[in-house]
Image (tube, rainbow, N blue to C red; front, side, top):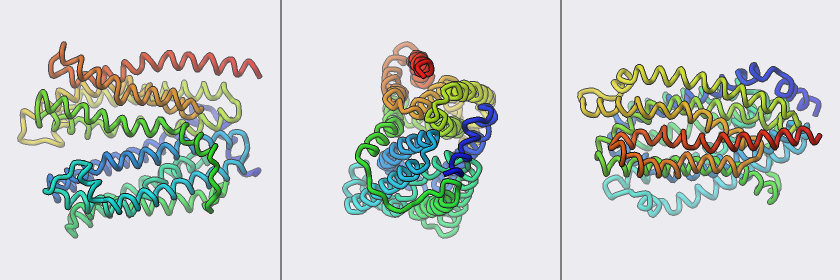
Length: 452
């Protein structure tokens, strides 16, 4: 137990600015490697499998996002409860809760995999598969499902490794898995010509390797977590699910907002508009992943200090996160804005109309990151202190409500550009809600501190 107490001393005493850098850099590098592997994965599929392969994988993604959302809900919710116990120096309670969350994730993965494999054809039709690509959809879904246990547990294991004061090890594992995925993609898709089956196997095997490395690292860290099945407490499970519910809503909202954009673009512009939106999304995914990586690196720091009752440090870490996050995003936004023609040119050649539209759209859409940075960090903060309902509100506003309003309202005044301006409009409108919530939270935290 003394080892566990020593493990938290840095988190509870170290200068918040240095501490955040120590945690944020590895997390952002890990997320950057993930973003790059997504880009490379798409390039391999598009060039060596073709449109049918890309379509098949895209059709599977909504179902996969739903599964991932449930896994993230339990991972973040359970991870927050564990981090708070670490801050309270309740190492035994943290270990028991860790085993319970891990057991629950594995049970869910097994049940979800069995149902998917048992009803794979009707699920494929439900996702929109036609007879033309049904074969590709079923193959990809079948092989990726075998690795669902790794996908659903790795986020939780990564979260706990960072919470256990091992952010660099977590980064090394994620970078290694992403690099392995790219290598296996090349072998399976380019060399062996296994098509979508190769893509599924490459991703699944890389995730499984990461799973093994995370298990080993957590079993040998200061806390010596146990992976033996534990009896699941209904009360703790409900708390974990509620506290992580914003992660589920974030995943659902992402799918819904993408659908809203696609329908609006198809109606006003057609395939060209959807293609431009895809290019913009591919370019912006790197900055988006960096923001999310920065936000999740902050969560265990906030939770541990919150659990220890160090409200002064919680406030200091949050303020530092806003300062660093905004500085990073401002520089990156300026870079993307000034170099948008070069960036779009990496994806397009010989298509002047699509090139012009994509570069124009990128210059508008990228402005959303200035506001998005504050919203994402705030949502992560509220989750870390168990204000899950507030975090859910932010996710729903960003992902669905304001997006729908913007797509319907802005084109009336701005024409087609109104669709591109919807993204900055959504984030700015959400920010107008987030600021009062933060002020309300600050007052409650001050009262809590004064009541001691």
